[in-house]
Image (cartoon, rainbow, N blue to C red; front, side, top):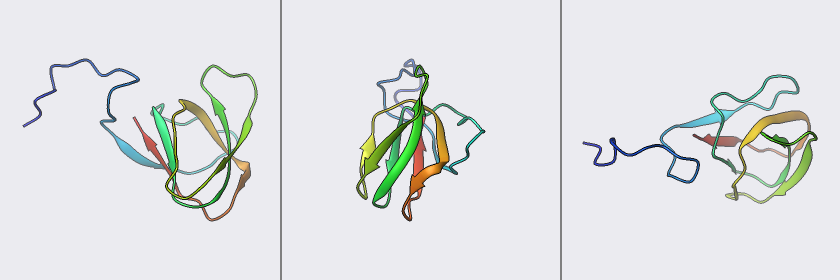
Amino acid sequence: MDKFEANNDTASSPARHCFIIQPNDNQPISPLPKALRADGDGVIMLRAVDSVADVAHPVKAGEIIPVRAAYVRATGTTGQISIMGYA
């Protein structure tokens, strides 16, 4: 039973869907995540939904990145990182 099913899902509410993101230079992320989580150390090259440029975001294992990323690029993403999206 979901006691919160009648509540609206907002960008700041807890995620209702989790999925692995495969970095790709051209494919946008779908569904658009509320946050990302890296399970390894490295750099994630991403573009936020309202940004016009990519940014290199250094990450540590277990770090949660509170960004609505439209893209996670393969080029520039380093390390043995699995990236989880939360939507």
